[in-house]
Image 1 (cartoon, one colour):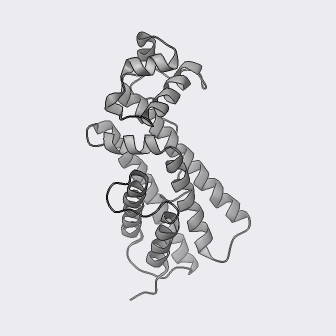
Image 2 (image 1 turned 45 degrees about the vertical axis):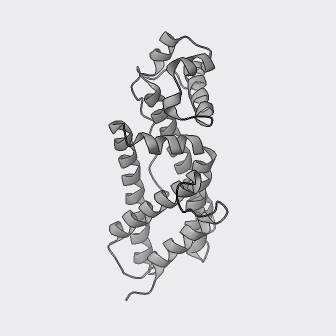
Amino acid sequence: MPAFRSGRAAMARGRRPARPTGDDREAAILATAEQLLGERSLTDISVDDLARGAGISRPTFYFYFRSRDAVLLTLLDRVVAEADAASAAAFAALSAHPPRDPRERWRAMIAAYHATFRRHRSVTLAAAALRFTNPEARDLWARVTADWVQAGTEAIEAERRRGTAPPGLPARDLSVALNALNERVLYGTLSGDGPSVAEDDVVDVLLDIWLSAIYHPPR
C-alpha cells in the first residue's frame, strides 16, 4: 500500500448527483452504517435500519443511495482516501528532513495504512466480504490496488535510480507481490481469520519483509 497516490474524488455510487459537501443527512446515513457494521454484518442491516438511524424516511434514503451496498462503497472510498492522505502526509513530513535510513519512510507508509484501516475495521472487513458478491466492489478494489501497485513501482524504481536499492526483480512485479502481502496480512490481523500477526507486531513484520525484498543484495 504505498503512498503518493494521487487524490481521487470519492465516486457517487448508485446515487443522484452529489449534494453539497457536508450534507447532514448523507453524513448521518454513512455514520449510521459504520456504527451498525461494528455490531453486525451488512446482510443483517436493512435500509430501514439505516434510514431510522439517520433520522430520515426510507424514500429520503433512496434520494442519496440506491442500496446498502452503495453506502458501503462510499464509506470505502472515504477510508481509502483517508489512508492515502495519512500516508502522503507522513512521507511529506519525512521529505522535509530526509532520514538516512529508508526504514523510516517505508514504516511511515505501512503504519499510516494500518492505523487507518484498523480505525475503520468494520468498514474494511465488510468491504472485503462484499467483493465476493458485488462486481462494483471488486472493480473499486481493483482500481485502488492498481494505484497502490503503480505508486510502489515508482518508489522502488526511484530507490534504484538513486543507488539506494540494488537491481532485482522487475519493480512492478515486486510491488504487486508486496501489496498483495500487505492486503492479506492486514486482513488476517484485523479479522482474526486464520493464522494472523499480532496487532502490535504487524507493521514491523511487514516492514522487514518490504525492506528485505527491496534492498536485498542481488543474487
